[in-house]
Image (tube, rainbow over all chains, first blue to last red; front, side, top):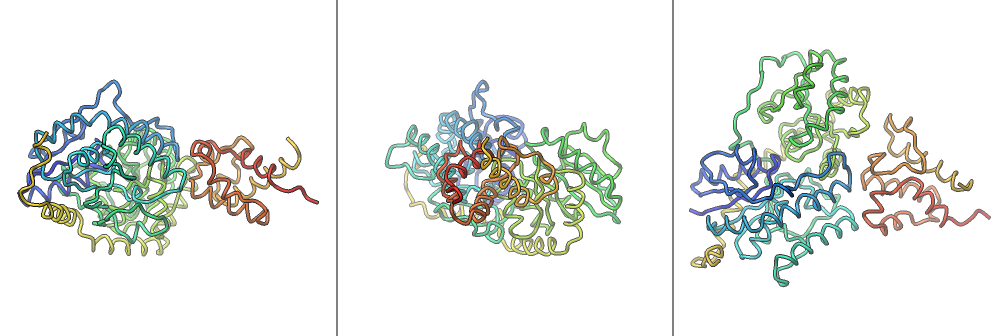
Length: 397
Length: 96
């Protein structure tokens, strides 16, 4: 049995798919460890798997950039203020973790550039986890060349010249994409890589979260409203708009994943929760309003639920575009949403059968995809292809 | 502001309202300083579609899509209605 080291950023949306893969690998007898920045996300991982904390200096701890920043600017800020500084800061502690754990394979989130650089430096077998399908798509020439220039500068500081490639984040051994081809579509050209579309994971390894199930009414249409785990705080205006919209829809119930402060003036048919057991809850929902976060979109579509997508920043506009293009949802401009526009959008996705039909077609595609078990099988193939008796790169250091 | 520039700005505003085609945009105040990305929340793909529409409006006498793709990322982030109107004003042949 092999040792696998998972390298992820401390972000729930990236940890969840990796956690499912870890769970399957561990249950098939592999030894799995994690390398990520210390913090609440690391503390919530299952105790059976060791965590190697990555050293990110608190003074310069990268964050996701100013919350107000949107559009292309937010993607620039994502690289300049988050992904690249974190890669530089984590290199040494990740190299030490690799030396200590001595993994047979690295499993690296696409945005955890330190993992890709270490794997390339040490010639370790590795796979990429594309926890958002947006990053495999080319966007437009100026943007793509800007990103590649940032990645080149980083590589020049870390790798010997012959190891430098256009996209260091995509493993030559395979890129596991947690989506389906039917959703990702072919509107945009993709970076050259070996892609494996495994669909959404099914929540393997996630801890249980409480929910007031008895509040849900059989005779109401139910909508889940979430902006994911990192846009929570600056989403207050959007949540207020949604509450106003739903207040005048007596046959609708909405569950908002939102700051507790909003509960004080929530109408009777709105329930505000800080966290929800999302996969279980989706089974009871009729539609989802969200920021077009990759996991939420794929999970909603896996359940055949139509969406209203209000992308805020980063990869979200690209994921929203996938939803609108496949016909399973409507676009609502995040900063411009009014209660009237939101109400009419909710009525449309609940009543227009076309949205639901398209969402159900997506559910069929997701159900046919292999999920975490498929990802584990790909990792198994990469391990099997490693020549026997080859000394481990990690132990040479 | 010369009168042709002002006319171009008005033409652009009309195209923006029709292209975004959502309730709020019909009453949203748009002027030369309005930025496509920060103020109107338009994504790059929407900007390219709008540019193609405007190019058609001027009967293909302009290459706005090409002009846009020659801008740096920083320029695109900051692009305003006035910037686009100025480019059109400078490159559009005067009516005979």
